Length: 635
Image 1 (cartoon, rainbow, N blue to C red):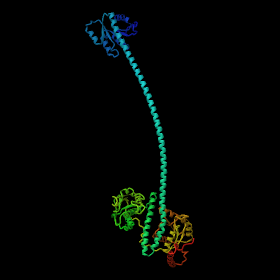
Image 2: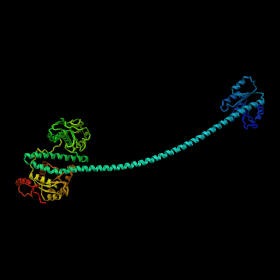
Image 3: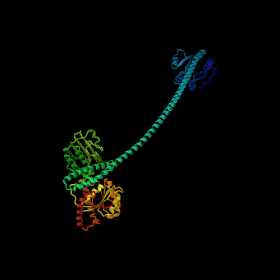
Image 4: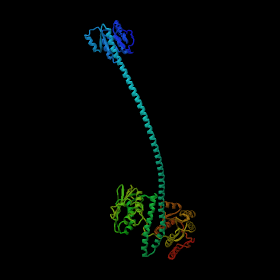
């Protein structure tokens, strides 16, 4: 059944109008209720069934429901139960209109279903209006309170929103200010850092430039020092040359008193030569120019040669030397001469710092990986403070012991060039010293040949050399005098020149067998002399022998490239000079060089030998009367 037309009464005095739902299946009852409530001025919605009431409740909002209990279909109780089940209508007050007696049990059922009151038929208009007015006003107050609560909540929400907005704005403002401050601080820090970095870069650049300048100065200083040492050694060799030749002259005198004199001079000259050699070796090592002539050899042979080299010094101080070598060969790959020099330096050091009649031990051992050489003495020992610097250049434990303090430094450098190690140990003063040398063993298949570390032995006599024509080109007068006297004493014919130009003229105009040419001539180098003579004479050129204080392999190679046949390092011992003369003479005969004697003016070899013998005797007598030798070509 459809809803009946709504009745709109004048609004109540308060100005607020509410909706009231009236449900009754009797139209007469609906009219009666409408007539009774028309005065209160509220909107009435009238329906005649429970179903229609539920539909209205779905769409509208009502302050009160006046519900008839007894209706066809959904009665009032069932309708009330359904109303209470819906959340939207659960709290709408329901007044039941019924014809039941107040004591009827169904009235209690109505209260159980949520009824707030009952109207008993026949309805009394006054009671209906009063109860309706109460519930409508209660609804209106409740709605007002809801509106006020909502308004309050909205206000609070608005206030909270404003506070939140203000807080957010304040936070954003503070955050922005903080960020700006941080950015300013960061910018200032970055500027300061950039300035600091710029200063640091500038300082580092300046430091690097200064370091480069310092390194350059140090490098230049080292270069000058090395050049000075090399030049010093070279210049020291020059005065040694006439001394060596003078010793050769003394050796030819059959005088027991002179024999002891020249032997002492020879020992001191040998010592001076070793000092000069050490200076040159240190200069080469520090400049990286030293050259190792590597080969395979037996370390035992090197140790034995080192003993031979040091024997004279050990014997001079009457030391007892004990040598322990393994039975099996010790294969090595390196420079045998240099390693013999290292071990000899250690033995010489032990001899020097051990009191006479001391004990020196040389022990050589090896395994599959390395070999060890130990030199031990019972001498003066080493102070603990010296152990850290004992291998430095120019360091001596005690001043006045002789030497330059280069032997151990040179030994360490040479050992390290062989990938080895060397160390010193001493318990202190008067406790002796131990030097331990460790070297890697070479993996060599087959037998290890003995190295050629021998030096010429003065006890071996050389075969006599046939008379030769020898030209000497040397700017130092003493050297020319001594070598001329020595060669004349040996029966040779000698001519000399004091500079390069005169040397070229001499060699070009005089048919000689051998020419001894100094490299450091005042007007031109000996290399240029050799080149000019070689170019001018060709196959008729004599054997050219370079004599110089520069003894490095590169110096020898340079001499060979300039046209020299041999290269001798000052001071040249008389024995080495005689050996070179013999070898050069043999080579000239082997290659078929004619032995012409244009300037001598003899007819046969026998006459030449007789004349040479007479000349030797005459020149020997004359040499004692004047400082210069015979047969000197006029300049």
